[in-house]
Length: 208
Image (cartoon, rainbow, N blue to C red; front, side, top):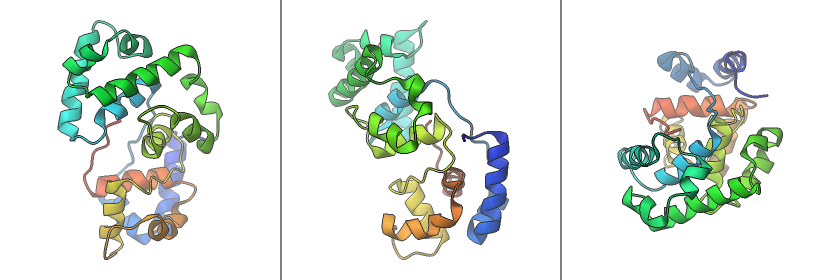
């Protein structure tokens, strides 16, 4: 099962019934406009670029990268064709340049088949993605949510999610996984849509 208008509608109905706190967020926010992305390499490359920098800085670097490869798109081939120096000239750090080349290399040699990831369970997708340099669990979870449209992903370590749970559920501090999992239990099997509403409650725009 993946996100579709019908699945999102079912998710919102479930969340409204199962969680009064989230129901108020849904009423304030309105319809869920979450949609799957189709450019898998692009999504992962953009996530690498965005790591540990502000959204504004990430957008600027990403736009420069897009300009550098025009009229082509950002793909495994165009990234692999750029030298580390060319990537750094667009604002990509040396470490992230290594990550981007590792991702591009794995896609090109077939060791990471992005077009086949949709055939695998969530845990298997994460396992394959974290083998890439610079991709951790959070990035893999974002890929599951925004690229594959998996409906039941709970990114418990995400700062925006932790902040929203603390504020909405009256917790004294940012929750760890042990504290947040019981709250998220009633969202299943639609934790992805619940997370989208949590982000909206803090007005945090995702970068995917």
